[in-house]
Picture 1 (cartoon, rainbow, N blue to C red):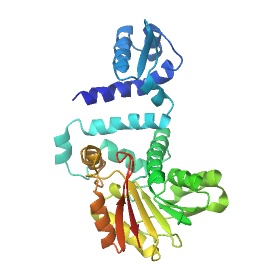
Picture 2 (picture 1 turned 135 degrees about the vertical axis):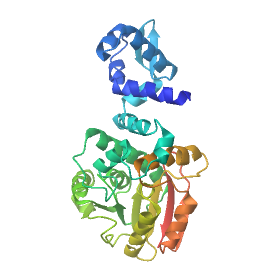
Picture 3 (picture 1 turned 60 degrees about the vertical axis):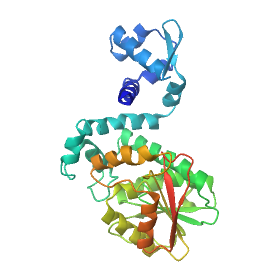
Picture 4 (picture 1 turned 90 degrees about the vertical axis):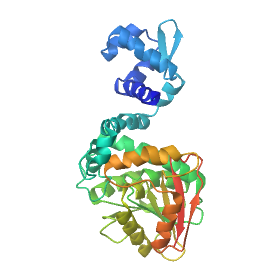
Length: 326
């Protein structure tokens, strides 16, 4: 039960701008209170709570600055965007039984956000990206890319297509690590246009191909020996997820590989993250569910892949991996 309070202390630091304030320290609690619009007593209560979580540190009597964990958060705006985003999940989970009893198609705070952000394909037109939207997606892709690069060999691949690749954060990371790779991005037209421009700037025009389209309605571009699905499959219910896998399989020549990377269920060391956190998160989102590596491998074989196997990652709370071969 205490975990919720800890998370709300962190949220107060982020939303109150306290990391940026403490980065200018050491400062007294009264000055911090004035900058945050709090009473001195309230600011001191928050600082002491942050001290216990290593977000803040009292280096001298009433002289406050960033703590060890606070310095990590202060230097990573993407992670702060994730903290701000979780206010939506907390709102949806205020009454968990009401959420579970409601029609899953009923709008929630999370479903409205992701429909607007365009992450749920087919959920409507994408609106203009907000700073929170962009930082959130970039942060989540950054975490996944790190796990994939540490666990998967790309030496045999020559052309990599990211299906639902968004603004290209994953391809930019993999392309930078493997300069021999030509990369392609397939996403909705308005998303692909932004992602293509960013990838061209990061990797150069000659290495980048952009394919606008809808991965449920349009054929997957051909000519790639590796296709990536990064935090896509778990966003969709079983029928559309199976249709997407079949669509990808039709585009691949024998021997080409499909890389699936996302948080998964029933992975040793990340069981709670897989089914307790992402189970309820995706339920609140109104689409998808976390699946075990075994379930995903079975879905790949049913879609026509010759083989599929899990690949261990160092931090499965960020992402697990399944590789399938056509």
